[in-house]
Length: 55
Image 1 (cartoon, rainbow, N blue to C red):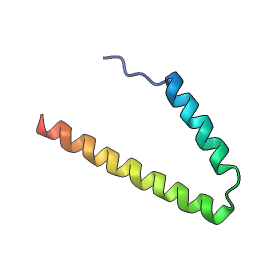
Image 2 (tube, rainbow, N blue to C red; image 1 turned 120 degrees about the vertical axis):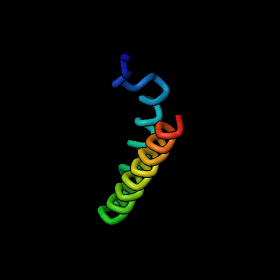
Image 3 (cartoon, rainbow, N blue to C red; image 1 turned 60 degrees about the horizontal axis):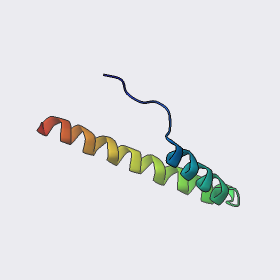
């Protein structure tokens, strides 16, 4: 099974939009945002694991 490791065009565009939005953040805001992104990735991992266990 080939797992795509590259971003598609829409994802690349969204990443660029996010990049522009975070340029003005100070260090504290950046750290809070990073922690929230990491939390959401962990939740995503949990959902995927749960769905795999159900199938």
